[in-house]
Length: 155
Image 1 (cartoon, rainbow, N blue to C red):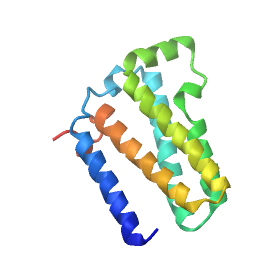
Image 2 (cartoon, rainbow, N blue to C red):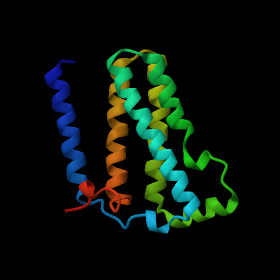
Image 3 (cartoon, rainbow, N blue to C red):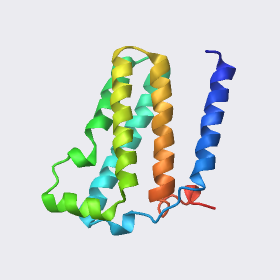
Image 4 (spheres, rainbow, N blue to C red):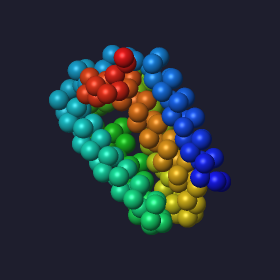
């Protein structure tokens, strides 16, 4: 695929995300979380942020092994897979809407797909999945964490 065509697809995807962001706003979930869950989610997000940065560099340098490792780490960091007590899980489910859980599950599913694409050394698929993951981050932060990300809050 030619560079200009790729840029066009990215621009279209971002425009679509931008248009849908204006209808996404919901009450932030952060105030509803217990201290423990807030701490765990922040820890997970810091890990995801670091891994996404490493994946980007690894993709553009063709380091498929590093992409696979980092993407798998993102997949495995899924908060619902962590050792939460029954009460923690109950608290989490009462604090966040189903849409939040769906976005989170979808994000981690994309990460697993990215790990597979990296194992297959399919750079194009890695690129596509990484872009979908980025769009998922923007959508979730815009809708559910707008209290922490003023630049993504509904205008």
